[in-house]
Image 1 (tube, rainbow over the protein chains, first blue to last red):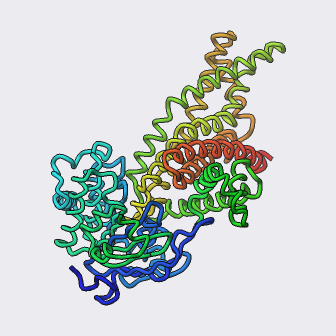
Image 2 (image 1 turned 135 degrees about the vertical axis):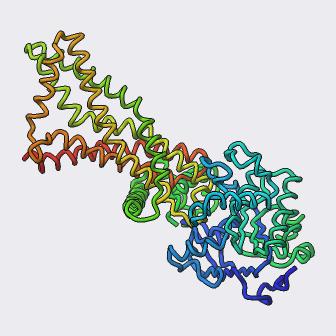
Image 3 (image 1 turned 180 degrees about the vertical axis):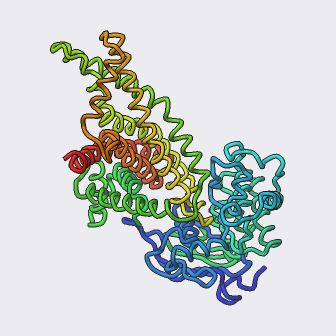
Amino acid sequence: MNEAAGAGSAGPEPIIELRGVRLGFEDRVVLNGIDLAVAERETVCILGGSGAGKSTVLRLILGLIHPNEGEIIVAGRDMSTATFDEVLEMRRGIGMVFQGAALFDSLTVFDNVGFYLFEHTRLPESEIRQRVVEALEVVDLDHDDVMHLLPSELSGGMRKRVGVARALIHEPRLLLYDEPTSGLDPITTRTIDGLIRKLQRELGVTSVVVTHDLESAFRIADRVALLYEGEIVFEGDPEEMRHSDHPYVREFIA
Amino acid sequence: MPENTLGAASVLVARNVAGEPNRVKTPDRTTCMANLDGASSLLGYPAVRLKQLAWHTQEYVRLAGRAAVGMVSRPFYPRDLVVQLDSVGVGSLGIVFLTGLFTGMVLALQSAVEMEQFGATIYIGRLVGASTVRELGPVLTALMVSGRAGSGIAAELGAMKVTEQIDALQTMGVDPVRKLVVPRLLALLIALPVLTVITDLVAIGGGLLIAVVKLDLTADLYMRSVYQTLAQTGYVLRYIPIDFVMGLMKPLFFGAIIALTACHFGMRAGGGTEGVGRAATGSVVVASVLILATDYFLTQILIALLIE
């Protein structure tokens, strides 16, 4: 799909670049020197076992936490040294799909999906409604059915899809997914995977997907990176991963 | 990272209990330290507790500062303020009414026992009026609101924290302090003085009920004695009784304490649903102690400023 696959440095200027990122909490090391580059319009899956620090990578990219060492360059700016206002500005180009969808409990689906526009634009409500309807159509939800429901009234798969719709309402260049398919049945999982591919194809967004689901990763990724004990032990396209003889990779895909 | 110290501490405890053989096998320095940390948070080992306390204090003060800035600078969230005023203020009316009523009644009843010995039951109004307006009104209202609204805020924000809703806010370029903390702080600053006045009035009414029904005083005698005590302490700016000023200054401080403590605990919640429960409990305990301690020092200061 993309020429940048493989080495990661060959293609166009990367939109995300992690260089020598280290992060530790009081008693343990989470990331021990991570290097990762994601090129424009590419879908990269970060794989790894539970507690390997996968979600932490997304939080670093968003500037929610800062590394102890290293640089995190997003669209040409270093997130770890950016000011609060710069970070807010950066996040406007990023959409994030959280693991449990993280929909606001007290707001309806309409208010959740339209949240960004209500907060940051002065668009009239009719226009926001139009955009919300479009976003819900992209994720294959019937807006008449769900618009006025509260998150507690949705099924797991629907919640995830609403989460995706909320993440793309402001047309970001970059979408981050934290375990988009965890806790879903195989059919819904395939639907969500298809959705991730569709967004990449039709809207041309760059995606970083954190998952522990190997099948999903092979379905959607241009490139995969495998995290193990705070380090990236494998990076390459899915086909290479299948034939890798790295012991942990073999154990992981077995 | 300072985030999540509470959660981290409890994780250490859990790991320590489960990983007992581990310590025996590898007695190197780091594991020993980890075990020491774990044991200490279980036993309340002073050094670690002090460190935690210092960290909490620092974060608390920082939160207060950011909330103060958020109160006077854009963006504002008036709709959230209205929602909070309704839930914190209107929602606390019932509990505040009951608190006031029974406090006033019991005060009248208790003081009657003593005062009857001297034939001084006509002064019951003084006692009820002075003690509720100066002390019991503000303090009991604050404690009750802390138990009801404070714990609710801590649990709500705690749930938002553990389900990543607070992260989601930040991701969408919204400052959680402005969106969540400021409306709750403002709501308590507005609602608590009003609730305190209601407690005061209901308590005086409760005393009146007992005075008339049980002690055969006339309502007129009782109320006159209530007014007297309020007039006696003196006035600020000639017309405002000092007791009123004291009684209305306190809820401002208590309201800030309740809101900030609840938000601090809620936004630091970690460790899933259990963490939410811990946040709610912690916020009520800490807020209550802070309210009682602040009450003493505030009274001291106000007496020095206004009366002496």
